[in-house]
Amino acid sequence: QAAPLADTIGLTNDYIATEHGASHMFITLFYGQLNTHSGAMRYVNAGHNSPMLFAPGGLLRSELESSSLPLGIVPQQHYEMRDTTIARGDMLLCFSDGITEAMDASGTLFDDQRLLDAVRAHADLPAAALVERLVEVVDAFVGGAPQSDDMTLLLIKREP
Image 1: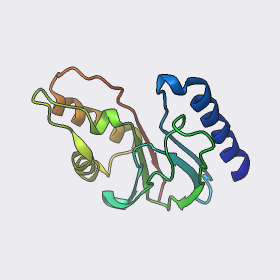
Image 2: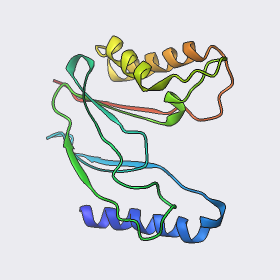
Image 3: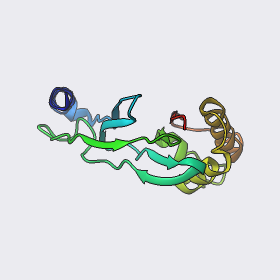
């Protein structure tokens, strides 16, 4: 199953690099396949913000770091599949750079540390409520300052 997925990502990369390379287009990508029974997850991170894997209570267990360049930069790029496990009680937070690069009126970034602090402070909430709370925290930080990027969050919380 890993080879067809890596091949598909590779073909997409080659298309973007060869057909749109002159326009300097690229795409960061995090793609994961989660077995909801065992918690095993196979993933590719192509230049995307590192999703954060938390143990119960909001303790950062690991970050799923990038293993390759974003799609569209270099033709024939190899995309490595990696494996991890989301154990019972763990949660995985995926986010776009629009979250950590959100700025207040003075130009200060929200940054990874503020995101970690917000997750720790509200880790006991159900997944949907935690996502809503994180958006509220970011919105309060920016204080109405105009933003130039999307703000996307995906949270997977595995029941204990």
